[in-house]
Length: 276
View 1: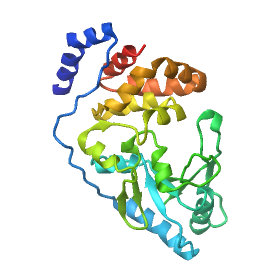
View 2: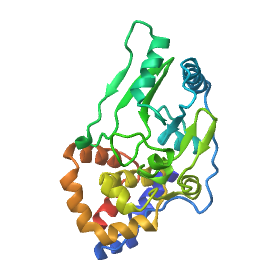
View 3: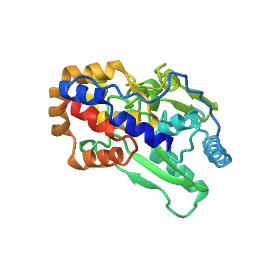
């Protein structure tokens, strides 16, 4: 009831309509000014999964291979939320190589590896291998970089993520959280949505990230940062052209459905409308 009343109060606020009419910035902010307390705990089944991977690396003398859980799983863990979305980025091989080694160890004589091929035209920039370890599904990819067919570094991968809060890693080998942009932890604590690097680079790389940015702001009730708002305000015509030229209707629909099925989606409508 408290959430619902807050939603109605905000939606009926005359200031929102005034901003819509004048086409000025709407900075989405529902979170409190208090810092968010970050915590990090791993479930037993996740520990078992990670240990199996480490054992397989050791068995195959892959001492230089570092496995990092990337993105959403790390973000949600720090926020005290559970996540089954385990994406592991590798520093010196494609995901399919490690997936096949796991398959040989756990499913001898069978093929339990799923491969999603790289398809840049449809926004799939990396080959992804999927396999189940005990009851846990994992995706395996190599660290990304600007050159599509090369393996990147942790920093190059983090900088190519859509948002700073999604650029964090959990290093399985060393059992620690890593923040290579030096922005992810701070933005999580302060409830801010920002890009790892300049918004013009992040959003030009994949214009759909503007909708993803908006979805995460609504989902976590985080404030959209000034750098993003200023970039969109100054470049909205170019953004619109780039958006409809390079993003398929299906990807746009999928993201919009996710947004409009969320509570407080009225803020998304207001935000999009404010930038035409």
